[in-house]
Length: 311
Ligand code: VAH
Image (cartoon, rainbow, N blue to C red; front, side, top):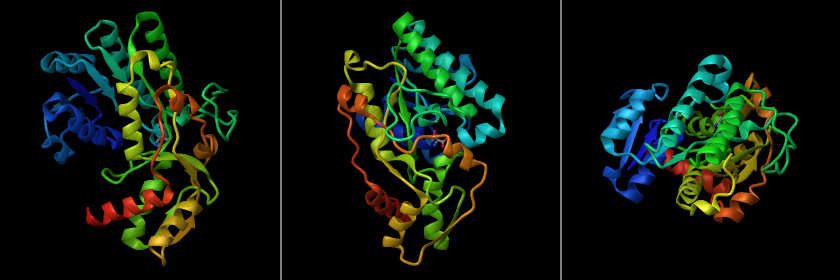
């Protein structure tokens, strides 16, 4: 059976629904810190797990006969800059707990999300290669860079089947933005429908790698269901769909909402965004487990506005 830790989060909540549609509702256990996401709690088996508490994870795995864990709990880039040591403790302790369960053979397989945040200002910014300089300047990015090293170490030394993807910014409508620097690209759709205008916390020409949630979920399932020998990279796979700037996403919205207006008021998150690449080379993912994205910016915009208006 599958356990999702951090199932109430942006990716965790959609992974829960997708994995239940593939493996059957009773074979996917959702968990998070509290019962706040009532829809998720009522959608199937739900357990309270504090990702920093080894015992709560171990007990849940024994109770439900878990063999695969998707560890989706983390503190993201912007929030991590406000609480550096909390971000380090949460992001690292949770990873060690799950890797050590796999090392002890209590579970068989692990998915752990990395991020383009592993890259820093000295990384080549366009078509960022799979193997390159990584000097991340955010706590979140540091935890992802170090986490990748540990994933590769546990795979190499203990044969742990851990798999990982460096997610770009992810756009989705089911959950509200959760403290990410790329979350301007989620907020903008909510504001466009509510107020027909948006004050963007990044400058108009800040290009960032992005992906629609449907593509991110499909890539995660493709990686986790690939034959183990195809998964040649055990740190984390570069992955990208598209790249765009706030100006480009605003123009895409204007095609659907002609009188939408955007203004720009960069804040501390501009420095974070400036330290990240503007586009990613994901050839390894395309070659190893035939990844390809489906959604372009117009497709994302239409789907976001349709789903948010009917929500
Ligand atoms: C963040 N959405 O902004 C996350 C992600 C690449 C960005 O890691 O922190």
